[in-house]
Amino acid sequence: MSSCRTSSRGATLDVETNVRVRPSKQAAIFPPLFVSVVLTLGLSGTMARAQSTKVPVSDAQPGFVGEATCRSCHTLEAQHWSTTIHARLASNAVEKSGCESCHGPGSAHIQDPSDREQIVAFTRDSNTPVETMNGMCLACHNGGERIYWSGSTHERQDLACSDCHNPMATQSPRGLLANAGVSQVCLKCHPTQRIEFQKRSHMPVLEGKVACSDCHQPHGSATDPLLRADSVNTLCTGCHAEKRGPFLWEHAPVVDSCLNCHYPHGSNHEALLVAPAPFLCNRCHGEVGSFGHPNDLLVEGNLARGARPDERILNRGCVNCHAQIHGSNHPSGARFHR
Image (cartoon, rainbow, N blue to C red; front, side, top):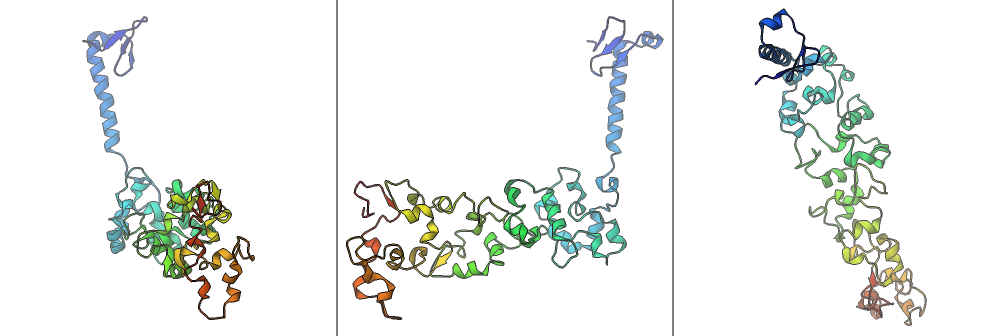
């Protein structure tokens, strides 16, 4: 069946190529079907020749020397980099530039390798500004968790992406981190928290059961200090759902903030408490007979300095009776007894 049709003006329109062929002497000699086949083959051949002569990206962009040239000097770095996810990416023209997609064009660097300003380096001892380093990373990683990076604590402290990540080697299961885990990366700059994690009661970060990134967003957050939730209580009750409420009888310090009674990283008192019971409770409930019993005997001022706690308070912590200290839904739980 012919793929051509004749218009009202007498011209022949090829359906496949959408080319209008006017009647001529050549058309009288060659049938319309023959003309359509010739035009189709001609267009296909032109496209095939254009694709076969496509110039490589490294040659098409001025100043780019290609990944092979980089590998000739940086053999060890290229060997480590070849196992990363960056090396496997080849989805667009920028990524096909290889090393130079992050380090910039290398022609000037090859002419004078001693001039360290001719290439973008991602180390602290280089002459590359931190803004330039991070700009290279954010050119691709500018969404998702990095949405709050601009103006964040780490950004204001002039922290570079390469301080926490190693894009040239696979040292962590994910994220191309500079260490085996995210907590090891964080604790390099936060030694105080490392000490707190070694206290008697602590979050199991050093044991690997919890990571710093479970509670904090290192790239920035709408809350301080870089929390993964709108508030401390929302973050804590994400795991401790039984403390979330709402309760019929609420405890004011609990509603205000979990940090009124607990340290988030570690404590030498049980359950991450900021002070041992009953002294913690007496910070608010220290008046004589405020609840019908002389709890003034339980304050630290009545104890000899360096002495053991008074025998009158042994095994008589407030939570022995006020067991539902975070809140109660019992009709008779106004004092959190039940």
